[in-house]
Image (cartoon, rainbow, N blue to C red):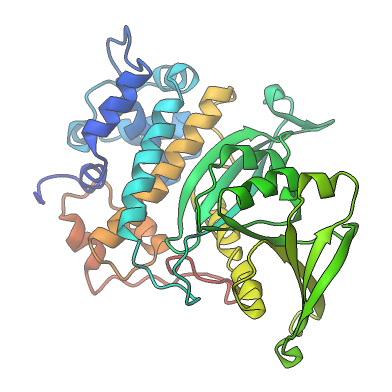
Length: 389
């Protein structure tokens, strides 16, 4: 790339502009807009994410501190606090949601051949949500409890690729189980989720679609044992049963048989009971498969620690969703850069390098691969790795 261009503009080159303009046209994002285009808006918010800006004034002052470089960063409009605030509140957030969807597809294609812990050819998804707490007096539209406000990010996470496949943002009141309605079950794929997603009528749709699920059994589940299969108790397994639900409503919601597996975790000294509609995998593989669900928890932890999604630049629904979607887009851009440039650095390290060098005019490959750059990553040793986060 041209060494005369700023690092920030080179990072933004990884966004397909034709797809971005399609998103803008789809929602008429620039209808009657004379200046401060959707692209300028996106650049401001992406810059804020990459440099950890604290607020609108912080963003504007930082950018305007070097006005001669704004054009080289990609901006074509004057940046003011009022203009940026107005754009956050009125520019349709779905523009940036659709852009994130485009980037997800690009990232998934790049990470398709990533090694997987289990010898399994099926696609494996983990479904979960994370809650972002808000101040009720400032975000009354997001009322969660009597004195609390929150939004939820529902995520269908591809465990093999380590890339989100579906993202949805809702108020904190929406129960997790309703997120199952957003899915179109993929035949042959595995879906991993916790007890909050147990709704046997919805789970039966997975079976009818030829998809598999693995989840934890609730303690009050009524069932009848039909068969017991032999297990190796030295591996921690206690039993592997074929059951049929016997509750009045649950037996109607899920009339087919299920598989119930009990496992004792020696390290944590706790007993886990799993249910699944797959009868072909070895019982220990089912247990190991459910453990892969932790990858989505790592994803939530990472974005909360390293992206600006816990403090917001606006208080409206549109402003909050815009900021979250652009933050997720930045995460995907960094993941794409890591793969396309074949970088050994973790996503965290790449973000740290970019955060202090966006105004520099140096080829991005050189900036991110110089051997003299060393970062001490303060990561907890007991965390699993997600792209070596």
